[in-house]
Image 1 (cartoon, rainbow, N blue to C red):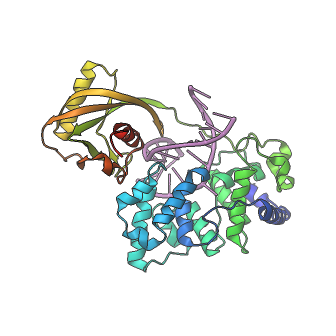
Image 2 (cartoon, protein in one colour; image 1 turned 60 degrees about the vertical axis):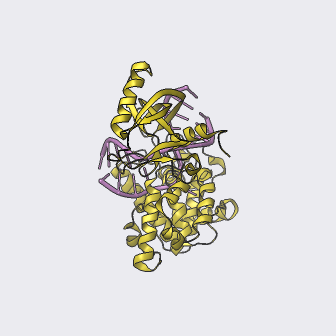
Image 3 (cartoon, rainbow, N blue to C red; image 1 turned 90 degrees about the vertical axis):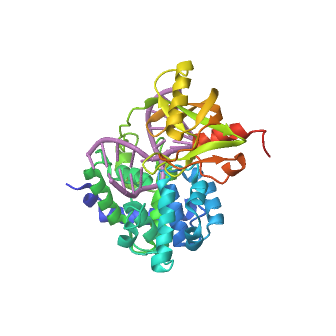
Length: 367
DNA sequence: CATGCGTGGCT
DNA sequence: TAGCCAAGCAT
């Protein structure tokens, strides 16, 4: 028995009618919605992957002001794109956007692909994003499933299984396919997401004011709080690290992170992991690690500040150290490294922790 | 199918 | 505070 198929034609027409009416009154007005420009829809959709609307808005505004169209983006250096993305997370999104902009300008004269399979072939665009662009920008009847609609569909259907499982995904996409109309599919999909985001919320859904309450299986069973089923999260791992700002004539040594590392392509103070406390022996071992990595001899390593910082499944205690250059020539075998003046920090994409440390180091000494 | 990839806001 | 959550994708 298939839940999606069991959703009756009557329910379907009620859903469409009530949702359209609700959207006319309660739909959100977001900066990327007005024009229907595929470039803007694309940028916003990539930014919105696993990222809240509130976090995205200022980044989107800045990004569009600097890169108003595909060609401007294609002509920019990658480092500048990453700089504007700094703080938003999931930086492969920025690298993919830039790479794709160059490819589209070079290979199709800046024409944005309009078909689902072409969109799906672009890096960083999966099933959801392809459906979103196809429906929002090109008025194609493509289904979508993402966090908001996933929750909404699960509750409407009363689906008690795991929505992330293969079975759950098959069911949800089948349902989305059944829902999406041929008339104004983009507006309809946005209405689904807005309802999920503002009414059918994760905790305390506002069922009494939901336009779909009469056809919602979860609500009728009073099970909206148990659906969708919670997913297990992986446990946090504690990590201790040190990053060292080596000073040489008013400049600091920065290292560009390698492709296979987290924060690939972004600049960072040389960073090391260790297990024990930050005692005298540790500091001397850190100086040794620094020498091995950079070829540089430094002295007077001292703690400036300790930052607690979580990233994915790691809780990092990061000891920020400063040190004085003594001797040696820079070895760039491991990764690119440079002596950077505080003024240049503004133009480089830094890791979040490096940015915090940099602000601390340059506070008062400059500008 | 599980995991890596980031960060900030909310409860 | 610690955990949950957010317009996912690639491998």
